[in-house]
Length: 260
Image (cartoon, rainbow, N blue to C red; front, side, top):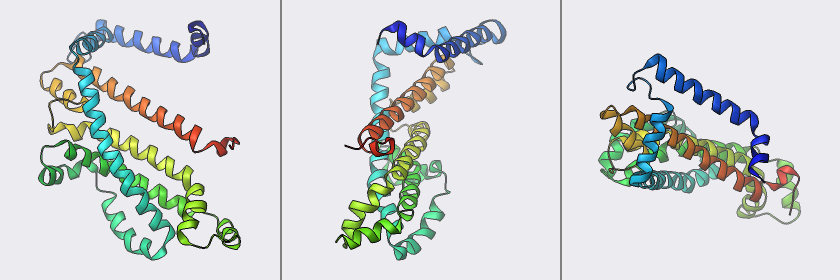
């Protein structure tokens, strides 16, 4: 698709962004007039260029993605199996539910002291805080998906010879629960990404988007702070878009009526 066609197709979005940037520049340059309170758009662009030229932004990206990957992968490995057994076996649910419901309302940031005590100033400690934020939405949505499996489908599978619990979970319950599970993963990833800044705040390394945001704040370099805020938003949006595109095309084709 040509650039002109892309611009015409996305004209409302592009126009809104141009208007927002213009207003931002005018307010910062002629009304606020203090970079400490509100850096201008061009100040933020200049900060972005300087971090790209020095190469530090790419290092920050890689460190933050590593922390995020540690937390989310751990949340998937624990959250999905726990949600499955809670949703499929009533006894397990009765045993696990009180514990889950006590731990779930605790803010992920409250776990930072234990992350430091248990894991020290390591990348795993930052990943642990992200894990706490991501795991509970995954558990709850997986549980909800399995609890919502139609009994008619289960009984029909048993009539056709699918009688083992493992087979019922694999061939009936899991595919039926997939939309709920993927929704939980999306929510968990979003919460985990929001925990990234706090997870890196305590300095597990000298790089990372969250760490650099606080570091520049300490130096009152608000243009860099705002630039890192935008990088967090853009990278988080990109991760979500890639995840949704992959899931919609590979795992949830049947929801769009496209069955291979």
